[in-house]
Image 1 (tube, rainbow, N blue to C red):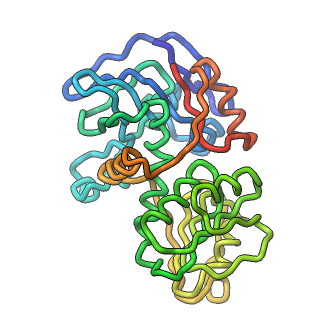
Image 2 (image 1 turned 30 degrees about the vertical axis):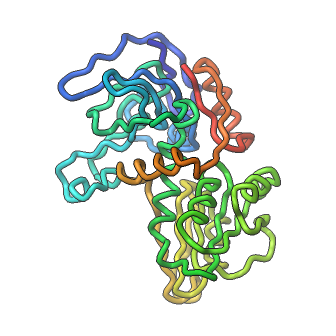
Length: 317
């Protein structure tokens, strides 16, 4: 099979021929039909996770064809299934979790091995190429919004910082799951316009004056965006970091609002991914996908790094 593989941190991916993978026990072989391109892939390439073993096939947003099931979306956080977190359905938080594209070979290939059929969700008629980003870009903001719903009664305000692939989903979930007024903040005029098309009540640039908000979701995670989030979140409100930027937020009396809740949100559970697919199949979500061939993987990553992607890029083997 062909696979795009990272052999050295900081280097371009290499497209090579590899032996077709073999499955053992309850493992399932999935023929990849689409693999989303994520900022996390850039972090891996840049060496943000230096303990990861190389070479590695990247790609964790995977949709494909599984024998006996049909077209599926791959849930991509495979826990130990024995710890307390796994037992309550939170495999994405398992300290021994293995993820495709990180710890195991992922979807930038013609085939991927999935440890169990339980991680394969039938697409229910969704186009697999279009559906691939739901595995992360669709799932991660769903969990973040679901967790903060109790902070957002009618009449409250939620601010979304970063209106890219994940932030655009967050705007839609906030409108679907809460009665909050939603403000999307992004330096890109095109992304602000897209956020408004998706239901944002208002958009703003990072330097604009913003009202206080009960909840702020930061999909960037830089020093600047975390500072902005702390400046606008109300006392007793909640600030959630989702973006994997390497920013830090000073914490202490006088540095953050009184009794504010500061947390992060990580990926999502298998049950939450099933809920995301439900929303998508009911036509309640809108997202934009551009496709490239697997042989264009480095072009796709370069476009993402330059900030030229309004929605999500999907590689098609």
